[in-house]
Length: 105
Picture (cartoon, rainbow, N blue to C red):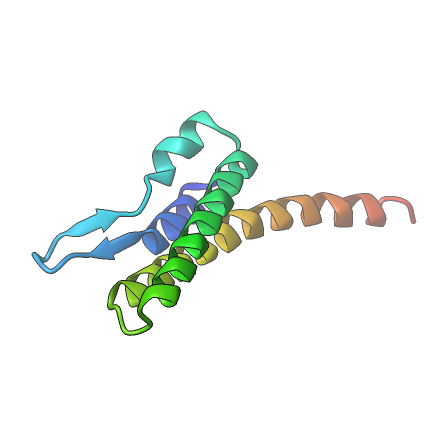
């Protein structure tokens, strides 16, 4: 992954705090330096499953809890980061497929 794609995915996983700071949901820059992008995407998918369970539990207890909004926002952010990571993979794989298809003519 190039640095722009990593930064775009990390931006989805960074939340502004009330103290004018920033908080990372997870530091994927660090993870992507040590693991393939598909492994990082799989970790994020696992996080989604955990957050979905948390969301179900919150909704079952009290649908008006403000924590529900936070969990939904985190789910959205993780989903967008996965799409960014996997989108880069599709572009990279798609480029090879096009190159291979054109060379047969």
